[in-house]
Length: 303
Image (tube, rainbow, N blue to C red):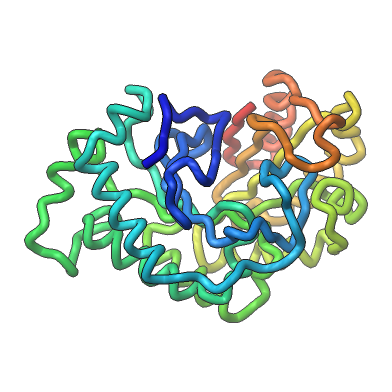
């Protein structure tokens, strides 16, 4: 491991662990330690969000995944996190609990053709550690007991953090159904309510209603949260018309989703637009959150 000092919410360096696919972060939205799985090690994504913290981001899909390497890394890191001194050395006392394994990283995870196989192996390893229910693979292990050293007393989530653009693919939807059986949860990106807004923020040309249809398909198969990033552009917060369009769009899925994660900028963008972006105040975000709550949503705010 090449970690230095405590991990913070402002640094999600994918290389910090020295591993190829697996990296630890302290996540403000997850509320503790998250073990990230980065399938897009070539920094390739099919979207280019203005606030993206990935350096040298390119359009494309990930290279083939070395499943054996990923499995070994996940097993080794879980052993270190639960039985070694990882938490003591690198995590502040209040955050010393493992919250999830999250498919996130440097691009869209579901664009990896091996994503279904990766999910299978992640489930297998987590069951060995008794982290998503009763282990049926290693009945003689006492890892769950030892995990209490780091305040690990309950099953963790398996989260997919996704832009949702590939949710109309049968293979992806099949994996979402599988994810639901692994104490899974999806955080589905929806940053704007108009085609122009999505193009401006995410640099893609998609119809909001088409994206909403993907969101509905996902939410029917697995517990799903909308995740929305809001920020000031050229010193100006989102216009009222944009906020209204966003509220009108998400209102259509209030009955299908679990809630909304509304968040601001915690880390600097590595995109060319970075100098044009700035953080919104907690009060501004909370005011928008209140309007979302009035539609009947549960809202979590991370300024």
